[in-house]
Image (cartoon, rainbow, N blue to C red):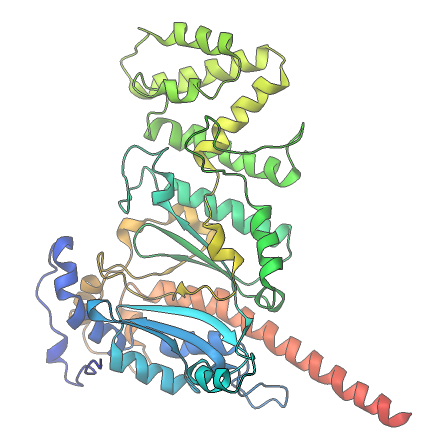
Length: 446
């Protein structure tokens, strides 16, 4: 299925006033043509990322690297194209403009060109295997439906979005401080969650076993609906990583989640009392709270939480103190899709895709400013095309996206993520090449 590339005239870019969100899918096919064809999608920068410095003229460049990357396109009517590969950035850009995919997924770099995998399988040599893939994490807010009451499923609002902010802060800090990774890209999924791409060379070359080990490091949430406790905190004291995480979790729990979700309201406090191991303590709290209503509902949650912490701390029982930690972890700790992180051949949605049901662009999130991120105010197709229509004449040297709300996300991607990453790749490439040259000289010297 081939989509026609948008024309060069300006008139075809004019659109009506934005439709309601429930009509976004109806308008999506025509709008996505303009999005890809009018340089709102950063084709060149995305290709530079996927090349990891192998698109230059340095003798250490692997000219086959870019062409061994797998892409998949989801087209209109759910037509799915897997194992797509392209030798050059221009070929990839042309394919995207021709097909106008509703979604682009990025897979691993294979040992051979994915498009030619059948030829290798027929030869009897099992050489078609993934050799590199970014370490990725996928967190969906729908996995928190048992602890959020404002929304459910794919819906999200500013009351429950702090759960994603917590996930970014906890995971990003651990990846940098505990694992030593530097080149990390966080991306809004376009609807209900966030994705994380860890792009350091040592991360891309992890095998499945090593990826599983990293993922398991983050496993705390058990997700077992049959048990009162949803987390597993082993040992008499928390691991240093969990201590550091708890500082973030408890802060957000008390400042935002507790009141926004009304966790200790009369209708919901039993859920938390069920997590207290000492029935006498739970019974005492229940007695305090029954019939004890205040005019301000937020005050009820805050006051009752302080009472719970005080009573559990007063008992001097390690198990009770752990109950407080378990409550906070159960309601706020990141719920990672473990299988996505463990397997090298798993595909993940490309940054700067557009979600067809919301029209929202999957833009990068600066982890240092993630508190400011508003998922309800990201660029949408209708907004971007309207901005272009009203932006006036394009100045010389100005990019199309400079005149739209895509400008800031793309500049962040280029300046804060891509440039430092490519600088590191080139330094590693140069060091590796020099080491081989020196080794060759030493061999000749013998």
